Length: 208
Image (tube, rainbow, N blue to C red):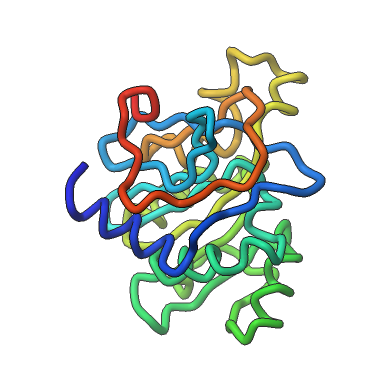
């Protein structure tokens, strides 16, 4: 794993000793395939629950459930992620209406955001869930040109309706994150409180 990716990992987890994937939600497992994709949070069984990647001039952070970018327990990580995703310190953060709880969490923490935002050139970072494919191509171009994307969702429920074999190519979030080598999968993810190792996990079972 190169030093640039290790530095990115350090930035995303600055000041964080552990992350608790706990609460009334079930994450999915994330699959990493790209050379720029790397695991940020890995469960005790080796499942990736948070990942990040670079694509073109931009960056993305992907969580295995949208609750992981809305619940207060994740706020320290969310703050780090937004700092890493921003192309410049003053870049505007836009939050899609699907993540209303995130808007409220950030605003109550003194972080300026544009709630109910739509994707546009004025934004530096866009935050949304993984369940709508309407702007998939525009989001990919937004990242490629230098924007940052914070996205969360799970695909196991979608797979019950559309089939497991369709998830990698048809699940809405994967139409965006797949460009950077990160995929939501139909497998349910592990929950628990996971400590953060100093060095990034890069064994072959995680990055394929």
